[in-house]
Image 1 (tube, rainbow, N blue to C red):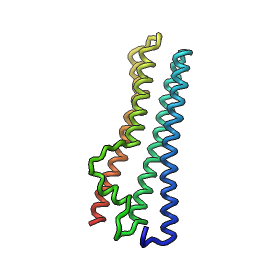
Image 2 (tube, rainbow, N blue to C red):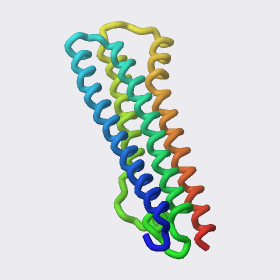
Image 3 (spheres, rainbow, N blue to C red):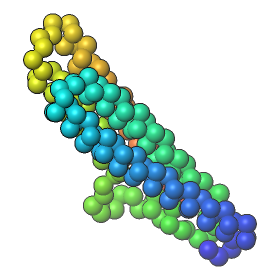
Image 4 (tube, one colour):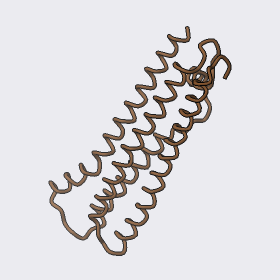
Length: 179
């Protein structure tokens, strides 16, 4: 990191540590959600407590909201590093990765993967809740139950779209700045 003051280097290292912390937090949340899912599915199968599926869907949704916030924090920090810390005359990783984002390397977006987990959990929960119970529900109740499970999926999809729209705007802004 040439042309950087000692303060810039310390700030850069602290921000990189914060990025790593946010990413680990996302991993820990997913691990907890998968563990909770396993435990709740076990209770549902053994004890036939199907209402736990609603609780599980709510837990997944709240966890996903927290993950989106963490992923957005990572994006904000990298943006700050790119424009406030990196030297203007020398491109560093943050700038390079944004400018060369169109290179077709195999990419797996953590946020998209986490969204797929949210979606899958809610679809499985909805199916279990409606099909595997011996209780008959009226059509109106079934519609409400489906909405309860599907709403987090649609809102999650909306959040993912907003996240990537902001990323596209950031890419366009960086192209204008780098010219």
